[in-house]
Image 1: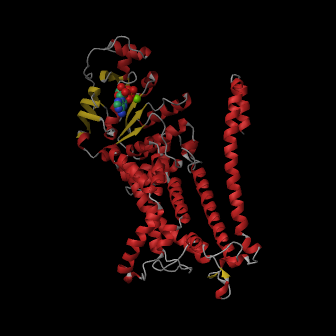
Image 2 (image 1 turned 45 degrees about the vertical axis):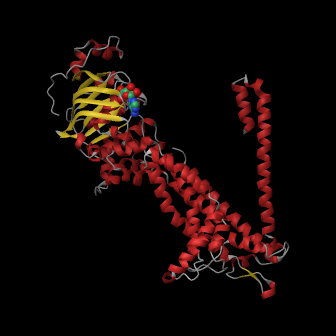
Image 3 (image 1 turned 30 degrees about the vertical axis):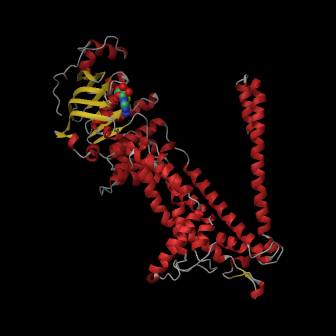
Length: 312
Length: 261
Ligand SMILES: Nc1ncnc2c1ncn2[C@@H]1O[C@H](COP(=O)(O)OP(=O)(O)O)[C@@H](O)[C@H]1O
Ligand SMILES: [Mg+2]
């Protein structure tokens, strides 16, 4: 494809031929960089995949065992079961609730910034959001651990909280973390709706709210879903902050108010307890592979959505 | 509608400098004049889209059926005064959703959607072209078709007045012809104010004609009359050649044409 463009340019504009050596250098340098990156990503994926299937290939654990609800990886305390279901459901559960908490707030914030806020407010809020994005996750975790968890433990008894470490605490911390990401992607997609269309809508005698509801939200639907999925991907990949507040109990999540765990939290927790080659360690790699597969699915989803929506 | 002593400025730059213009009910009024003379600004003042431009300030009187437009809720005014823009600006939705957009978004409880859809598309002279593809994206239509969908979209909300800002400027001759058919078809049911650079078109579709120059109405009158015997030299020049070599002096009061506002 690149060479097609080059031939075309050469054919249409003969003077380009003189510049060919320059183009060639540029192409070699950028091409090399691109190749290195693609190779690295490929290698990384192959490495994770290869280690991820060691559990089945090397230790002979049946593939379906992964979907068992029990995680008992320690051979010194009885028969082992490498059921990853608690982690998969834990990740999905914690991430979905985080998205459900963050989405309305983020969309509200994005709409406010895109449609309602006067320009000066926009000028203040945009950098503020960037700072928000830059706060390291350990800070969120620390806040969660020192403020949120004790608060829930002290005031949440009526709802069913015992220790405060819980699915809910994990989701709330993640929701805060992804709020700026979701907001800014949604904001961009609102701004991408041409101003002409807003004017056309208002000229039809609609109020600003009706324009938001009937034009802006539908027109940026794909962008909104993309924003939420990107936020969920960020949340699914977060380990530290979640691990600090979630309680880390490898149980099938049943109550928002009880401890659960996630793929990432369990991997970071167990890393130190295992050695390479051990079945337990292999199961951690399998968790990594599951995580990669989940974000791959999310990327594909976003691609499909953005392609179907297309440019206006 | 009518305007009296209408002045509009962007910041300190005065763009309309005292416009007195009667707009006859159920008739087509064409606004012509060189680029930058304030035609678009005048249209946008009539349905208060000027409110959306923060630097824009308006003084003078604009009325609809004797009611003061400036004192009205702009949303209610725009329900009575719809607008078709220079560039076709269909929404990224199906043809059906485009046409029914205003009715549905405003949620006034009407449910005879099918009827509104068909009659609006018919009045915009595009029904036959799209009746079998109502659920396809309006973006897939040609520019000329999109513009007529925009007209249908405006008619569907049943305004009293339809403003059109050079609706044929970016269209091919065939589309322009259909557009003119549409204007002639809705004349009587709607009051139309059309800005156009196409002088023969103004001649064909309009009942009244206003020639604007530099923020003022140089001459206003019945279209036939203005073409037959313009009072101003500049009007004559513009209507004949689209150019003004000797600028008119001062503002000329609207001719004494009997029109009901
Ligand atoms: N939003 C705006 N801000 C500042 N000046 C404007 C704006 N819109 C139009 N103008 C100026 O007002 C004058 C009249 O513009 P316009 O009403 O678009 O004229 P026309 O439609 O007759 O070409 C022009 O000089 C234009 O530059
Ligand atoms: Mg204009």
